[in-house]
Amino acid sequence: MSDEPIIDLQSDHYFMGEALRQAAKASEAGEVPVGAVVVREGRVMARACNQVELLKEIGRASCRERV
Image (cartoon, rainbow, N blue to C red):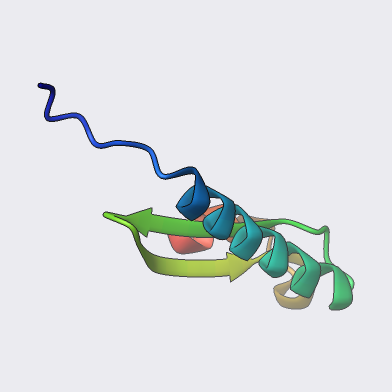
């Protein structure tokens, strides 16, 4: 038997939903609707939404902010 983790599609659905909620938050703030969630071992380690317009800095995209 393999030691590979089994993908839990329900968890993936939840985490994608969280990224979409972050994107909606960005959209409501007048940003490009981009959200990001960093997950490790089934736990959300970080989440963010786009803040480029708010902070006037192109390097503040959601995925870069979290990494």
